[in-house]
Length: 119
Image (cartoon, rainbow, N blue to C red; front, side):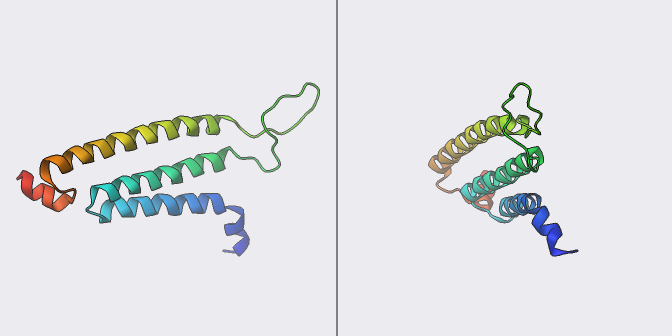
């Protein structure tokens, strides 16, 4: 592959790297807070991917001007991403509050130790 392929597709490649990094963090870390951080990194990769899909080279902002023919950038992915950011923030807040309650009850957020305690 040529270098121009990577330059032309850098948002997709970077979003795949972010998603893969988040996946790696989730499955290799035993600390619950690190797992939540991994989920947030995965979500960022997904958000970037959706924004990259909605972008059109040479596209203008989606503001309609009568009598002017233009290529517009699709606004739907941006609207979906705004909704996704709100949902991811809510999920993060909920997960962190559950982790606080787990720590208050068991005095650990280390997954193997929690599994040992709950047996």
